[in-house]
Image (cartoon, rainbow over all chains, first blue to last red; front, side, top):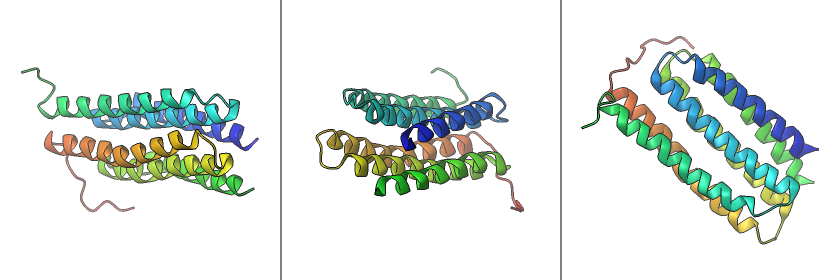
Length: 86
Length: 97
């Protein structure tokens, strides 16, 4: 019961973060919203793995955490020089 | 059970994170809220799941994920803020909130 309500609140938070990603005034607002959606979907996957007792999904969670961190960091480093490719 | 209380604390952190993204009017304030509140929310929910499972084998993977998120999520938000500052996004002075 508590895990189901936690998953519901996580999905609602992801919807609000998607709204911020659509109408953010700056580009970095959209990047922040992307980071929020990444972290919240990771938490959703963890809660679902404990809820269904399929613990093989926790390995997928670790890989997804590394992928999200690298994506946001590389896009930020790319945007420092104005988005030009050297 | 003790994990229900910890999960309810995580719900409050999640709701405060949503409010903080829409409440502030500056980019750096939103980055501050995103960096603090959401890291704490994810950590609280994972600690609640650890308290639910007890001493089992998948707790090791949960602790590994917790340490990784604790290390990388503030670094990610700092990289975003540094990228925005070096690209010339203005800092709003005298922000009344």
